[in-house]
Length: 173
Image 1 (tube, rainbow, N blue to C red):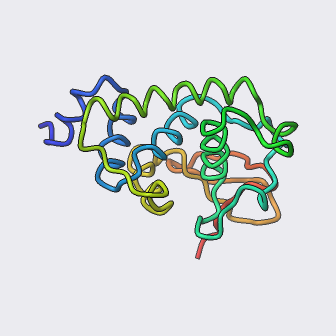
Image 2: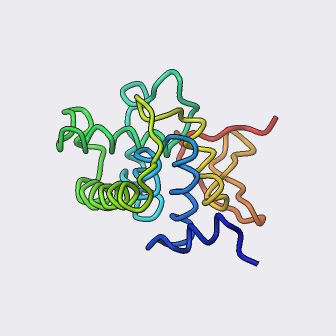
């Protein structure tokens, strides 16, 4: 049986994961930020391997450590001024940035048109709310690094992967 949330999500012209992000983001007041993150997750990484941004330039004190939040902040800055800061240029894949920004704009526009009660707050909502809404739709994208000294990562379903040396990953416990 389809839930009420499932019926609303099915009415949106989005992949089911993106529909779920859209509905949860509206409830949590993080629609614009969720659109940017969904675009990053559904398209491609903004930084080629080994070329992560300078954390001190991008991270905010109130944000938990997250590679995705770091990319979302860079995308937000680019979309606001349609350019990059001088220090960001050599690290970022500019073609990927333009493509992801176009998808994010489409998702934001669709969110405004499909459900007019789209929630947002000044400053874009909390990072905790943003991550919670994304986790509901992308639980298989979560990775945990059991040993800080190694690049080995564990993902849901006992899948294994590798994380960049400077990737933000929370140790268990």
